[in-house]
Image (cartoon, one colour):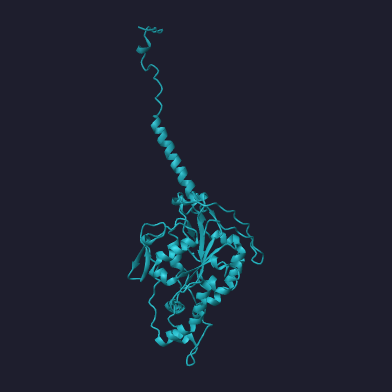
Length: 386
């Protein structure tokens, strides 16, 4: 019956006394793992949240499978525009404000598109890319179709472009190349960095400045019938300043004598041959591509084929990417960059032009004809404006 105590009872008989109980079993392993996982999720969320404000997005994360070309070293940067910039080698296998141009004191509106805003997730992976100075620039012309071309090109997985117009080589050159490069999106190996600022084509200092950055920079010029371009330029200003003089009164210096006012920017920009001359002093003609603004509307895939070939890109953008919007009167993308939805340019594009007297149009075409023919000779392409 067990050992007896002094009172003659066993320990089981003593009131208020119990045998020692075994320790409680440890918590299940599953519960520990769940707690550890919850702590890990909280830590990851806090890390990403803190990173979102300081990291830069890694555009093109889904493009890791795209073809790659050999990387090039980034040149040393300078901040003083008067110094000679070191040259940036171009990838051997490579074949996006306001325009200063004014009409009766008004300025062209800021492009509505802005650089992409990074999400916390893309910021977390931003180390997979780096910012490069652009290897290709759309330098002109205003109201020629530059925004359409840029948006079409951004569909290509090997093209990364800043959305807003940097205006570096005409307005912000004093800020230096480091500032300029910081505006660019991050790119992966084999991707091209691009930007577009249409006012570069008519800026006297731009050719030398871009050449100083890199003599290998590819230049794209989107041109359009200069008469239609001038009317489109005027229409844009009229939408913001309805009180400006009529198109006819701004066009002529002397209406009765038929003298065209070439000091008016809407007319002056259309003198393409004149503006091209300083560019050819710094860049060979083969390093420039002239895109037809009219064909961007009538045959966007055809013009994009030429652009892709010029940049040394695989022909990925084809007819299947476009549909014609009857309401707007120009082609739109079936799927925009980073989206599965159709995309058309904004309401500021495709405005209805005011009616212009036929005699005014005839006089303008006569004025531009010799300049157009010289431009055809310089570029080796007849754009058919006559």
